[in-house]
Length: 474
Image (cartoon, rainbow, N blue to C red; front, top):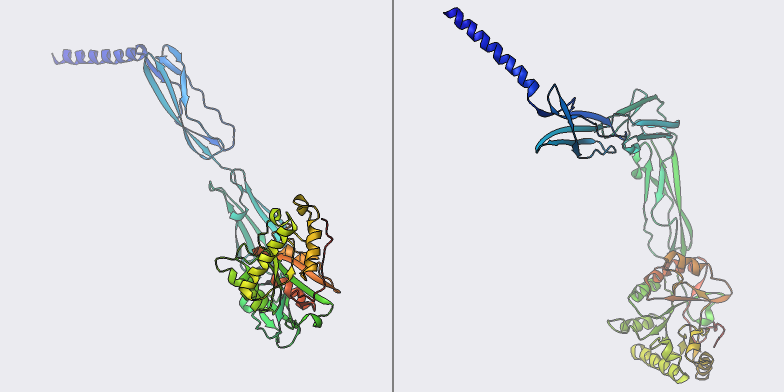
């Protein structure tokens, strides 16, 4: 009985196995052949999505199915990207995910060009150019690291993917490079007599020793009680004995000694400023006071508010000439007739007297006596106005040096160059500037320094000042 039962169980087992084999060949499903879950590709290498065969069927028969791919691989950027493959048959979806790993396995290229001239104990070298480039990261020169061990200098650079390149060269520790030294401020300074000299400072750096400013030795000095030229020398020596130096020249000049028109020689500068007072006039007056320089202000009434009106009195009290420019500075109004011009002029004369107590008769025409814009409003007006001023005892002044601040430039250094380059001995150097323009006011100190250092006297215009006229064109 037991033997029959064993036989029956064995038969049933065989039948079950056989039925499974049969089902495997008969049951139909969607599947993909040889699908990979992960692949790698080199960055910057052309990449195309892998093609696979999706089937509906079994091992006996297979019906190829169309499929879609979602996702995109950026072959220009390292990273892992997902591609989703999906096939559909009779509303049944079959999805497989492929991970594409874009990698960079190429090492950077490290180049050492030139010959080693000096090598510091810390590995800093000169005479050679060390560069590094990478196929993916580009220029890696600033990522290069170096280390000096037992006369072997090793350069190492690593890219963002960890690929590393190393180069080692044998070197001799030796430094032949001079330290550099830089002076703060100007290498040539101008100072008035009996003023205090203040060292502007300096900085020194060495290729091996680093910041060596504290080791700079300063020699020479300045005696501001005596006019003349003085030299200060700054010397720096590094730990290898390399030495460098820089020099600063300080020119001490006697302060301006203007004491009246009759005392002037043939080296005279007249600084004149139009259209003020304004927000920079006080700054200008401080500069003029510092050097005891007197100037001429051709003023208008446009800004005689908000405290600026007090600047007229300060100008007069500090010895400057406060002169007439215009009450309105409106060409269309003042040049419409002789009566209109004289009305504008006399109003400004009264305004100046109101704040200074002084009745000035020194004048500058708006636009200068040679302007042609006045033709637009009345032919011959400039000739009429000039004759009338002479008849009434006024004196008008133009200029023979223009700073360029009326539209030519807004650069302070250019204004300095324009003025100093035009100053000439043997004539009244009459300079046109505007104290309502900061970039022009900022140029005045350098102009004064130049003039004083070259023996010029600065003076205000007076009724005795020789006339500086341009040709009248209307």
